[in-house]
Image (cartoon, rainbow, N blue to C red):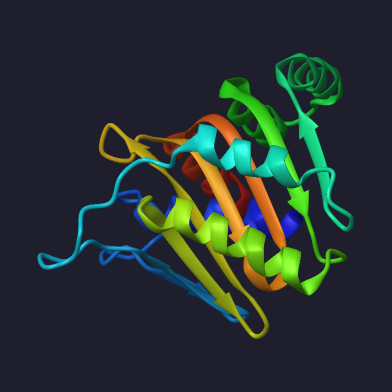
Length: 193
């Protein structure tokens, strides 16, 4: 989970003007590299993530042997925000908690223990669904490639419905709702001070 939070923070720094990222929209660290996906003049136009179809695919596989699906819905997200709010002590923690305010649901799928055929089948279906979506960031480290898909809203002021896909680890994380890029950038600045 720390790796995913780190990736989201790096993504925000990379795309926000005037943030920790550089002018060409890419950032890196000693363990890997991060780059924004850009649509060149000759490539096809990217569209929003079809969240309903991705969730439908997850539902189709959730009872398959080797597939583990954890879903935290609106009710539990609300309770989590309340509980976390009681434990908040610093401004940094308050800022991190405010990022959760517009998250409606989180779904995590881990299918490493599924049969090879079912993993390939699920990866193929997921790849077809995400292929036409906007790839916001691709992160490469020594072992894995992590893809983040989502829908940029208002010139990247926020991102709706993030899909974090790590094919080598057989993991998909869906963060449904809206994440403010400015709040993430502020959190990064506070952490670097």
